[in-house]
Amino acid sequence: MKTAVVGATGMVGKTMIKVLEERNFPVTELLPVASERSVGKEIIFRDKAVKVISIRDAVDAKPAIAIFSAGATVSKEWAPVFAANGTIVIDNSSAWRMDKNVPLVVPEINSHSIKKGDRIISNPNCSTIQMVMALAPLHKKYRIKRLVVATYQSVTGTGVKAVAQMENERAGIKGEMAYPHPIDLNCFPHGGSFQDDGYTTEEQKLIDETRKIFDDRSIMITATVVRIPVVGGHSEAVNIEFEKEYDIDEARKLISSFPGVVVYDNPALNEYPMPLLAHNRDEVFVGRIRRDLSREKCLNLWIVSDNIRKGAATNAVQIAEFMAENGLY
Image (cartoon, rainbow, N blue to C red):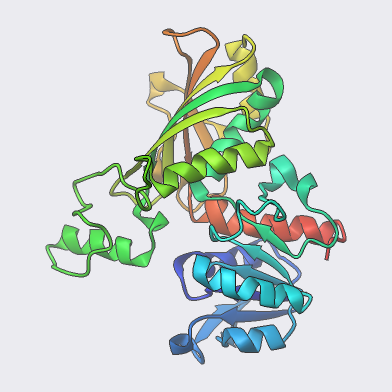
């Protein structure tokens, strides 16, 4: 299967290529795509050097699938061009997520929303993916009424410039700033840009995308996004209010039996999810599972996952796998 990766030289794009190789996706020809300044450079795929090409050349090559991670502007302009040429586009940007005609997919939860003939499939935001992975079995059993979430997000979610800023600050080097404040030895409640209602765009994604993935507009959600100086993954403190009463042991079992989720929860041995544990892994880790003693039908969770892998690259490749396995190309 001829496969293009748009944004192949970026942090997520490189990981997408790595995941395609790790999962033995049936790539017959890889088309790594990047900006004009990267055209002609080489990347390694399955021990062979492959030259980076332009996006126009990739369209003309008519790949069966194009996985995008090049930002919303590029996706808005080029995803329809690929789609009109017969290519299936799996897009990692925010460009198409809330389009009512575009499925927003976490394969373990709502792969059924992909229909034959769909040409653009959207990958959710990284923080949304890990949260809904942990919540899906609970929502099915008890129905979620309200969520209060605070995320503690890795600088990798912003990109290479943010990682460089943190590393420069750590080394005492003055360099380009990706953020309005220093990030090393600091944190700030600011992800994305601020909206008129005081929420940020990253917080709004958690609200809108969760409702769309669960196909349930009734869930009340409030979110706070915090950027922290780590690189291994995003962490989330989630308080859930259910419609029905729940059993804590059953809830734990439901979470641990969900595909792709690992319960790591033994406070007596100081065992709980951390970015260091999740780094370079595909699982979503859940711990600190405990009843909220201040309110009935409420549960607290701590959720951690590598935002570049399951939060982006791996989820996109899983969508491609599902479509290939079910003849949806």
